[in-house]
Length: 298
Image 1: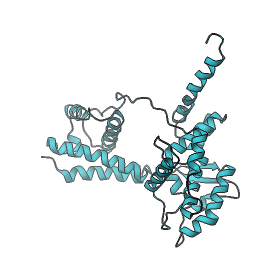
Image 2: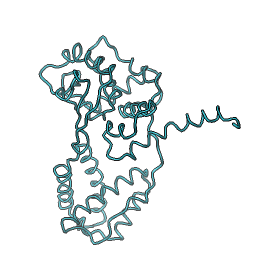
Image 3: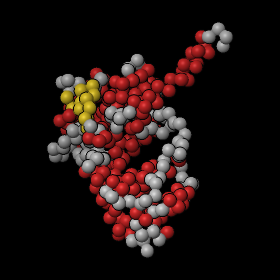
Image 4: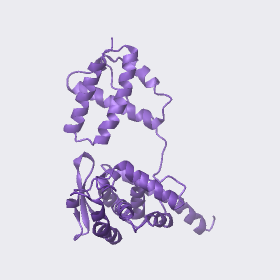
């Protein structure tokens, strides 16, 4: 008979290792937890007593149960299960069956979206600058677009890591890795304006974060998404716009401007150059258009 308590305990041990040994973020841990809970429910229904009791047949059946999910979801869930089982095998536990593979789940090639300059300017101009929250939102968008920060990095950025005199900031990203990022002149000007005329009207007691909410608390990631969507509608932008779009736009504009791919990798905090390289494909349509306009046999 399956024992939910034992299954849960095994998952919690794995999640603790993610937090403390690997320095995984809160969001990463939550994603693993959600995926493994789904598998745990399946094990209980099947009457499987523990993670170590999974057989090759069980793993095949479990994989088949995910067939109606999107490829990205299936790949993520199988990756979570593989990570748990691998963790237990390293501790001398785990199933005798081979670990599940994720390489066979093909993902559709998707290029990140980027805003062109005219649309970007409409978005940036949308906040009401007569209000402290409007100044904050403009500074938030400028910060993400101007420095390419992830939304979690932007809302969690401490004042102590913002060096206005040197026009630079240091940010601690994934896996607790710290990187140095320069701040463009226009972004710097908006940050200074917000810090001088916006933030003091929002904070009610000392806060470490650069960006604060309307109530003077830490700004949430969900709030940042909601504000971006609000301004996109206000600016008449039909496509979905979130903080990640501004980060993508930062990368694309840098590469189109001639920035070195390795430099952009460092600025974005990417582990692999392959992650950054996808942005170079965004210019293919433009290359084809110029070719057809220029080639004598077009």
